[in-house]
Length: 73
Image 1 (cartoon, one colour):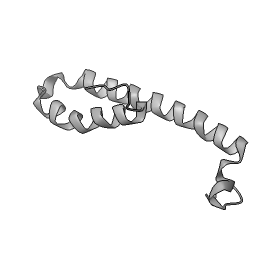
Image 2 (cartoon, rainbow, N blue to C red):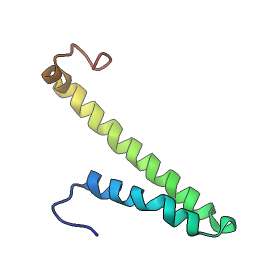
Image 3 (cartoon, rainbow, N blue to C red):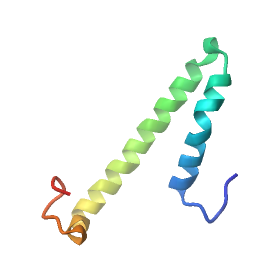
């Protein structure tokens, strides 16, 4: 159930908790679309994370944790 108080990341994690059980119930011969959609989710997540990382690095966000750069952070 989606609640407006949940962040998008919390909603994603909630869905991921349900995914293994749901996927196990699907007929093996029909898992192609599940695999494709899963890869789409991974690709979009990587794109969003890359942009967040770029913004975090540009802002020097790692400095708040006492690090001198992104690599040591």
